Image (cartoon, rainbow, N blue to C red; front, side, top):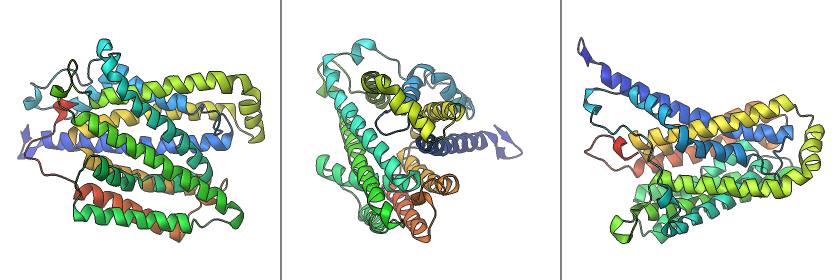
Length: 366
């Protein structure tokens, strides 16, 4: 549709991408900030309760069952007459026979990696603080690049390796000089180590997922290769079940000691705690929605760029809200420099790996 030479449909498309991109960044920031705030409130945010895992994974799993209307809202925001032939369903249909087929059991390796990565990441978040945690977590680009080169025999460009080296430099500076008092140095370093180890398992998952997604249907005797959303459902659904079992066995029997007394010690508010849990759930749900919209319409490069924007935003928000609670959260010129180095490297790596495509967006493959 054109009005006085102005292509209104293109404007709607740009507005739609800006909206989904902003939602992806904002919900990613809210998710981490709510988790960190919950730890300071003492409302089950302690490292050994894993109550945080429930709203996080519940929000991710729920996308596959009720996410269709919201995804359709994004799609309709930029729909034009040429899109009439596109499929009506935006989320893949769940085939229960395929989900529980014996050939799909191997997919649970992704859940194993996710469980370890989430647990270690939670330790890193509590020890290092959300600001430093998010910046170090951006360094997963390094481990992903190395693992894909070794395991999948993928060749990176010289520019990509240069940006990997840039990110590594930033991480080394962050680990050697975290700008914290001597009595907190060991704690923060442990947080950095836990976060880096968590990144390694997340990167391993990226490699495993890419391997599964790259398999052709001819390699499977009775089933087509799993889709990205199907792998995500396996991973997050399994983690949700495992953490529910853990909470039922460990956390609930010791509720008074682990939760009630912790809230009293931290002078937490029950209303704030409930609000934070809801914030984690809602942000996880909307973050997944935005992820699928961005990855299908713009591609993985933009996910990498927006991940860097999220890191900077979390760093700034953490310094603003949590400096009084934990000194490692406070801003310093060195931390600002590390943030710039790591995020610049992450953006550069994403752009260097971009492949020109003559086709338009592959939204049909969502």
